[in-house]
Amino acid sequence: MGRLNCAAVACALGLLVAAAVAPIDAGRTGPELSKAARRRLATYLTLGGSTRQLQNEKTLNSVNTPLGSTCNQKMTQMNISAFSFYRGSNELYYRDLANQSIITGSAFYGATASPWIQGDMHLQNAGTFDIDTGKVIYDLNDFDESFVANFLYDMYRMATSIVLVAWENNLSNSTATSCVRSFVNFYCDQVVKFYSGTASSSDVLTSANTYGRIDDLILGAEVSDTRKKMLDSWSYVVSGTRTFDLTNPDLAAVNATERSAITAAMAAYYTNTVTKAGLQGNGTYFAVQDIARRLNAGTGSLGKPRYYVMVEGATTDAADDRILDVKLQSKPSVYPYLTATQKAAVDGPLGGNDAARAVRAYKQLIYKADNHLGWMSFLGGNYSVRERSPFKESLDTSGVDLSSLTNLAEQWGVMLANAHCRSDGGSYGTPTSFETVARNLFAGQQDAFKAEVADFALRYASQVYTDFSLFRTSLSQNKLCV
Image (cartoon, rainbow, N blue to C red; front, side, top):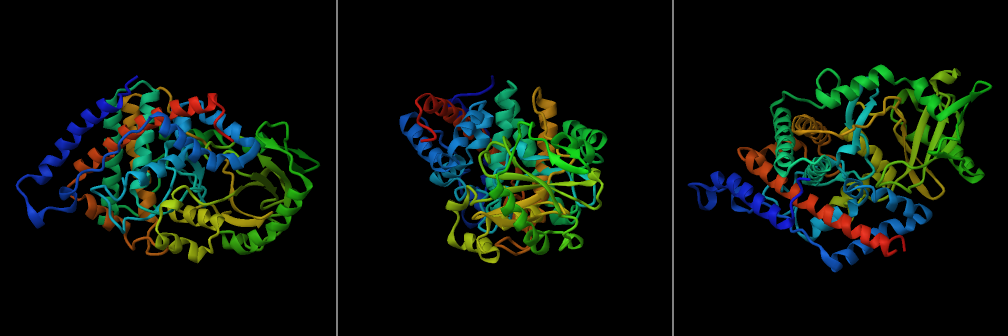
């Protein structure tokens, strides 16, 4: 495997960063130096040992022990690989960045460079689905952790996931670094296109403009996936009415209290919060056919109460029924590390409702988002609502090499830039023009920005491997879910 130890990473990346920064400082002194030239690039210090293990146990238990019986299931899922651990431990990421002042210490930090962020940005939080025009796209698909915050949070986290995927496929550090640099380069170039007016919020990744594995994934969904196929995989028809198939291991029966509460909450959802005006107040369309618990979904959100609700759809034909994905929402991992002003900018207009926050993030980050987006409240919680897309597919990154991972990284850069740039507008604490703010931060210094993100990604990926080893020790010592 190409993974280096901490000292080797520091040495190799120190040379990389020095090479990138040197041209910026050459021949300039005093006030004419840019902010990025005056400040050192942010460097993450990898930590380990028994103190680190105890800190991780405390942080992980604070988040996961309240899950009760599903806590151990989540730990088992996280134990599959270092990348699975990374997916399930977002709280460690934000704690670590805060403890080392990585964001504000960056040469590319800007106080107003805060669009809506995805918040748990790794490659498995993107996939295929259809937008409200019916077009199948590849884009961000999870908004539980979204908030308005500095764009570097998404950049660093996605870059780290690229390194982890490279290492899982036995690729070298130089290959991983090259792929991260491609990701950053295409992100920056797309931001500049927004700035110059040659890209817009309607730009999406489709089968017409993608290549490699993403193109194959979209084409496969377009050709092979249908609503009936999706419905039949989760349900069966009895006397013309669809009923969830509870022999499916990813479903379970709801109790009478849950069924009654969800059914009662539906009217407020489709009357007051559903996105598409033509669906608002349409009780016939949203007539509940069946309800089931959704199990085994995701990694970071595993254990959160989640339901599938089958509704009638446009006609009484069982072939056009819709499955609504109803999920409990809570404060995102970044929340404790935001200022009171940042929190109030989002919480104020949305009443502190985290389901409304997740829905608003979806609408801001995605072009022509799901018509069924909304939220409902029942049994003391606020739940986001979205349709389960018939074209939902995830990317397989096994067997990637330099060429294929570079292709993916380039398109991930474009995808993330599109999302950040379309999510601004001056509301909820976002800048009026994120592309202007971001472009001014890295203009003429793109190589230094690539070096900083690559430096962080290699260092933090090494931290993930260290933490994964500590996590396995904690599991063996029964120190988790207690």
